[in-house]
Length: 363
Image (spheres, rainbow, N blue to C red):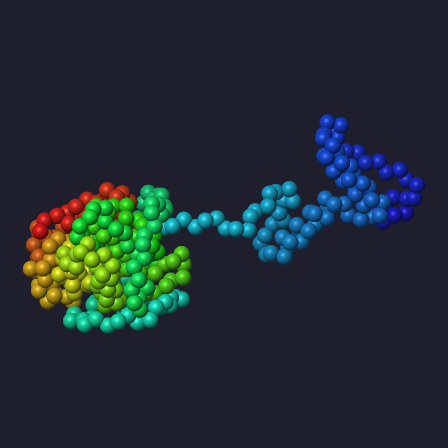
């Protein structure tokens, strides 16, 4: 008697539910081989191929707590994870009230930048900002399109990405300071969709690497952002003589970039007398009242843009009041975007071009 219940001399009959007469030669051969394996398994008391496959799957599932046995006939899932969509320029980690970043595993990737005389006071620590809980419509993820930017090398600094203007002659510079956690290259590609007609687009790279999808940050270091911004304009002017303006340029920034941009604009009023600030906060400039009054004759136009559902929207209104009292309503404009949160404008090209048309108009 065999272990499987069969005795010597028993006739074993394998009944197949598959009609092999209608199958092709290769399939009939494969089916015949399977029948032979099953017959040998029954005679020798071994598990059948099908039962062995199921046992291996069950053992694998038992080794993982909480996992269920996989279906042996289910398709195999690939080892590569799905592509992670790019989220345009979002502030992933709010700044701490102390002015130091609360993010972990962030390292400086470059040596200290050359010093530039700083006649201004230490900037106010950037207030904490949190994302609102208001339910908003789903935003499709923006993906980089168009030509890639060129690289501007800056000694002792990460450098800056830039795009050339669509017109010839001497053109002004639109310098954008990215938000915390943004990929500077992709952010520059995003802004390039609306800026070529207005001049050069320059996007300095924050000094600290967050280690995720090329994300960088400034760690609220407006002094460093000032040095890198001025160095970028000087390097661009040296590379393209008689084509770059050193004065009457536009400073732009979002979130942490808004903090650095507002302070750079106050420290360099001749280089950046025009501002385009997204998600401005009165706390970014609350210790700069003397400098704000001193720049009354230098500042040309300031455009503040914030989402209606951004939790700092009231602080943007207060910043607008402070700057309007000092510089007048003709030079300061505020717009609150409906159905928008702490983000770049959902209708990006339309809203940014509208703002830049106003910022670059006039003497």
